[in-house]
Length: 116
Length: 114
Image (tube, rainbow over all chains, first blue to last red; front, top):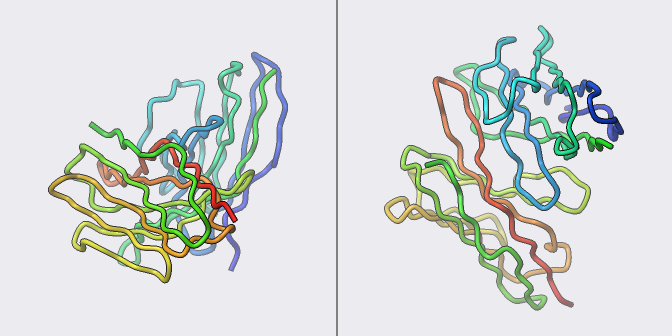
């Protein structure tokens, strides 16, 4: 039973560049949520994707966008990178479709993004 | 109204003693409260969770208590071991128009001294 996977593990970019991060949910899950975790802080919700649509968004600018594919995997795109975007980006998968929907979100290993 | 306050920010206990971490919240609609453990450089891992229809849940050395009236919930670790050293995050789930998001506390760095 495959767990949540993310790629790449690490990434170094310069200010103004664009980045794409990828996430594959746990087998059997249909929902992907993205979180940003700055050093020494708790994860902050970016957005959630279900049925290939953005269902809810946190307090992040439009530079942050995403996509979900028919196989439930997801991408997070960040444009015009700022130094403050340096963080660990986590995706979490869960199951929303009834009747087997679950409360639990399982996290991937994260992508460490450094913006220079 | 969706902040979660977590205390203490750091906690150091002797091996074998108990550790308690407390979180308070303001969103009375929250009904699911997970706790995650994050070791250095690793992903957050769910260690225990509780739903609002129960007041306490226990899993071996780990227990969580919930007081919905007072809007606080706590993690209790008994007989602590060196491998319990990590950062612990409390969280609550908010459901907005069918979508779910977790709101996390600021984290507690727990150190178990041998």
